Image (cartoon, rainbow, N blue to C red):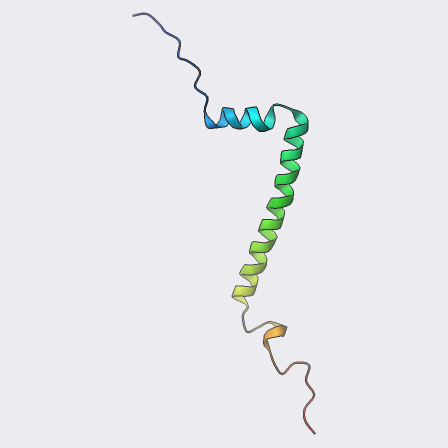
Length: 71
């Protein structure tokens, strides 16, 4: 049986490597942008989850707060 080397198949990870990680400047920019946008997405998601879980308990939801009693 003769050994025939397999052709290198360009996979998803190899494509990502070629686009983003080959040059250090592009890699660093990709990491910093990912950290920035990832932080924004997590902050937005946690804020919406907190609001959803605390409906009716927040200061804005209680109508009598900040009003003086009628004399």
